[in-house]
Image (cartoon, rainbow, N blue to C red; front, top):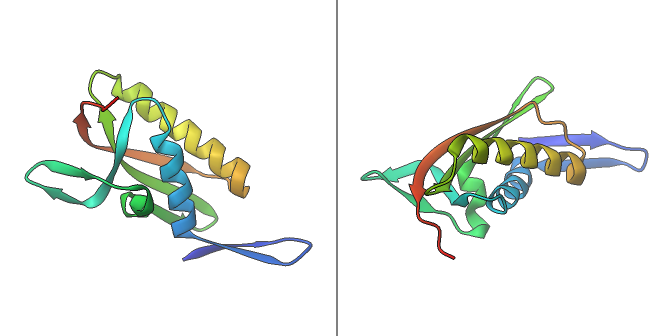
Length: 120
């Protein structure tokens, strides 16, 4: 699926993968995030950290009527307050997608897939 925007100059089509990549890049820049995790790949209780080119595998972009919902699967840093990290990611992702693509996001749902010691 994709989002189609109609402007005075023509039509713009934004795919869900682009939205997911921008959201993932924004999330990993937030304090307390070790990385993105795959939404379906948990083996033996260990979540794999995704590389930059695979951020879309850890994010689900859903469109329901005119509303846009994002589900993000992340790994947080040990010793951080998880609720604050999740709240920060939610607000940053909403802000960045609104500023860069002009999209209004209805909800950003955070799923914590693991806690790891961050590498400095």
